Length: 154
View (cartoon, rainbow, N blue to C red):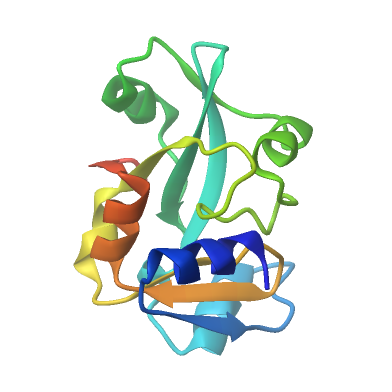
């Protein structure tokens, strides 16, 4: 059991933990959604960004889209946003890049999410290691993480 699964269990949120096969390489996002049997828009990747060179944040965007760093900065009230270096993201979250979960992080980071999270009855996020996905109600996700939503994906 990963820290992410433990955090959801402790919070009492309904969720499902799903093992998936390897989905590396070209069109990996489509293969992951196919393996889960869901629309690619319901699967979210967890990114770590840095605001104004100092504050790390977690960001959830659909796996097939990119994060708009300018929009993130504006939403967060920062002047600038950049992607965190992988070692920095790993140290802060306690997870390996490619398996970073928004739940159960070593250092709880402020969370921002693309507004499309609420377009789906269930969403999928990393369970804390590569090949492990968590399915849950997006409203539960937003509430537990106190996530701020905006048009972050392009």
